[in-house]
Amino acid sequence: MTGHSRLGPGREFDAVRALLGAWGESAVGIGDDGALLDVPAGARLVVSTDSTVEDVHFRREWLEPDEIGWRATMAALSDLAAMGAAPLGMLLALTVPGSWRTALDGIARGIGAAAARTGTPIVGGDLSGGERLALSITVLGQTKHPLTRAGARPGDTLYLTGALGAPGAALAAWQRGARPRAEDRARFARPEARIAAGRWFVAHGAHAAVDVSDGLAGDLAHLAAASAVRCVLRLDAIPCVPGVAVLDAVASGEEYELLVASPALDTAAFAAAHDGLALTAVGAVEAPDEAGVGESVAEQRGRRVALPAAHDHFAAR
Amino acid sequence: MTGHSRLGPGREFDAVRALLGAWGESAVGIGDDGALLDVPAGARLVVSTDSTVEDVHFRREWLEPDEIGWRATMAALSDLAAMGAAPLGMLLALTVPGSWRTALDGIARGIGAAAARTGTPIVGGDLSGGERLALSITVLGQTKHPLTRAGARPGDTLYLTGALGAPGAALAAWQRGARPRAEDRARFARPEARIAAGRWFVAHGAHAAVDVSDGLAGDLAHLAAASAVRCVLRLDAIPCVPGVAVLDAVASGEEYELLVASPALDTAAFAAAHDGLALTAVGAVEAPDEAGVGESVAEQRGRRVALPAAHDHFAAR
Image (cartoon, rainbow over all chains, first blue to last red; front, side, top):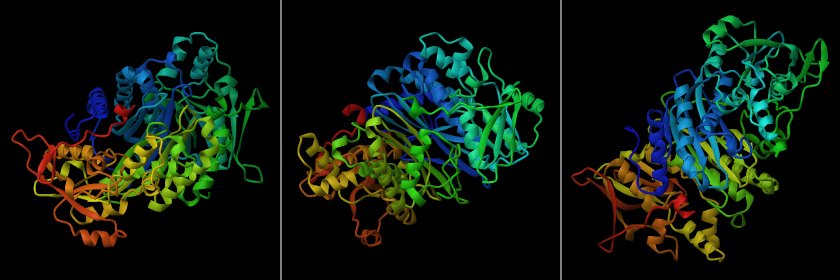
């Protein structure tokens, strides 16, 4: 833990010391009121905050503590991936009820593993008591050419990384009291932020990107609205995990794949550069109607179909 | 709300739209996965996260919604003040139970007022449901010459801004079921982050600083430990609000004054530059013992006295 300011007394600081032990080399310079970072010359700073709350985003009996830490961290880092940014650091605001205190080591291990996997230093944090476990994670990254939601242009192709539907299938199984299939559970419990993919999209001239953490249908609507374009989704083209219907897959939240609007991309080259991760053309970007208002529509077997409503934590409660 | 990406549908987005309305010009570029900021050339980025949780940091009946928002925001910005940084932006992770939904406008107004007061753009956020109101606020700032806890040197003088004890007195009154004095309550409900003071300390060659949000006694111990120096606090010199004993004042948490280790400073010039805010010499920095371990000690009327234990949210629960 060289490089940390020496911490003073207090039980909160003992807990923080234990976290630093779990994080090892991933924790940098914790102990001051603020952490210091350097942004490369010419690059822009990208920042985002994402919260994972017990009984809103997961239930305790679904996940191991290290999976909770991993998942919350990757969910936050996914916003950097969607902007095409390289991670600079992350800060954690942890609310830890007494009943979770013994799980804190496991949660910290999961956070540390996700930080190490993506090369993201843990540069600060804050620990409070509370009634429910909550992890609010702020991520910082940098890029010279950020991808935004507003950049999609008529003529672009819509591309999607990976395959959809596994987290939704796992959630549906849990909610009906069943055990999810192992592969669905793993995709819910151990998502990967598509950091390298986001960098690749920037390098290959993509115009816009979002992650599909609110479900592809909802996030496509956001992209269409922000870019003021018409997005046409071809449901037949969307890769789904086995056994999941496409209309469930596009409504499945808690996904961390990227949806990208771009001039034509070499999908084989993408897969080769990302350990076989699929990149699939799933639709097209067109000019909006005369009013210039963006909208998203879907087609299946040549016919227009309605898209499911956006995934919405507030409505779900 | 010009400049925000157009938001898509969903109840969560309606709530976010209402917040953006309350924040007006203080909210910048919200709507993408991440927000974009620029750090001036040659400056370092300073980041910090701070959480305010219902029943841990305040009780609902103590504060108006706008005071909760103001206080949480200033508490977070205080970490930038302690580093001598100028604010670049802030991100909010709000956990809002159903019973607080109608108070959200007021909370947002308080956040917006504190952001406007300090010139801090609100660049992003995240809204979840939950059992207790929690505001996790990440602040970003920049400075070419950060103040850290580890910079204090033997020969420095210890200086303190303002006067201590009011928030502790307000808390003590509430906890015994009484009504706090109006001036004590105001200092608890409407603290000021000492941003301009922190910038002044940087400009005048200070070596180290902390805010005293965990109580002067506790934060002095952290500064001594981090700097590996002996800090001698002169209790007789510490400005306290009327009616508060000095040993209560140095244990009083929820204070947002700055403690600074510096070569001699012109306290009159400081007060003149900060609307009469006091700057008081309250102690001295000495070399540590032979083992080189930092420690803090206190003197009162020429005699050594023990300092109270650090304020510790975890112990308090």
